[in-house]
Length: 135
Image 1: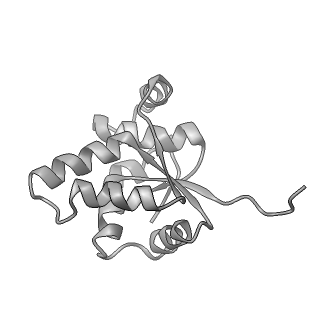
Image 2 (image 1 turned 180 degrees about the vertical axis):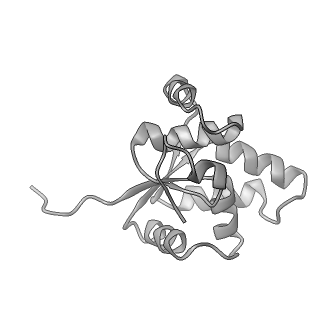
């Protein structure tokens, strides 16, 4: 039997992941957690909605990160795990009444479903009573 301590788990929103992958400024705690995930000391769940938003932003040239770069990065990392958008996530999102934007609710629902903090600097998510955030 292993005596290893379980890795801490988090979810991440679109802005947090884009800022990290584009090597832009993040909150100190968010930066440390993402670096831990890269060295398999933490696990970060990435909602399918985050992937969809990055696809859109990349296609519209609103970010420098390409969708292919994102997928290559996630394929190479074991500390990042995709959490599909399914009925369980939708049920969790349905319970979240204080985040008005649907995409943000779906991303927050990922963290709520897994009962762990969401890495975000979005003030509407940070003020939600349904999810704990870090930045």
